[in-house]
Length: 181
Image 1: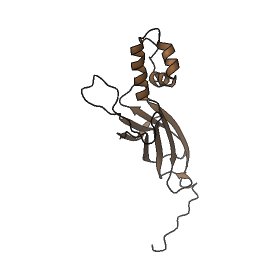
Image 2: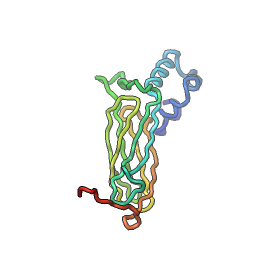
Image 3: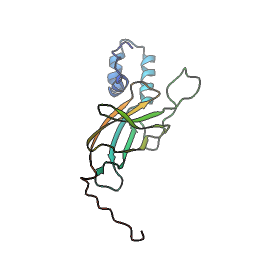
Image 4: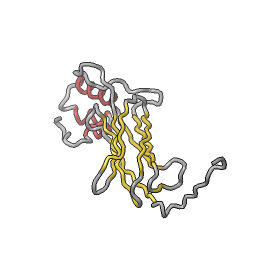
């Protein structure tokens, strides 16, 4: 790459520039045909936005020992709701290849650990996942959700998540037995 493409976010940053800015940046070094190829590629790849939140189903607070859920949404911003992603741009690959996304939830601690991972082959404009994990620490918990694209370097995303978990002793939960139990 003749531009400074040494850092991992270079593709996402390049896509975010917009067509006019990309053309102005590259017009001295590229032919009109090359510029058209680059713009076709940028239109095909598009931008992805990652959002996530953590909660415990049917509970107002998170307590040590709960099974929490990280609700994940990866949205392909260049697709309409009724569209799906086609094969990736890989003209020299011997067969059609579709994007795969790896979602890895990592506990940010002195000793980081993977608490959940999942692969998605979904081609729709929105990928929605629920990553479940057990809460093991009271107090402030910090997680990082990584979304790694297997097809394009530089499209990876990361979201920082924090939540507070009460110890079982601090919890104000009242458990009621069902009338038939």
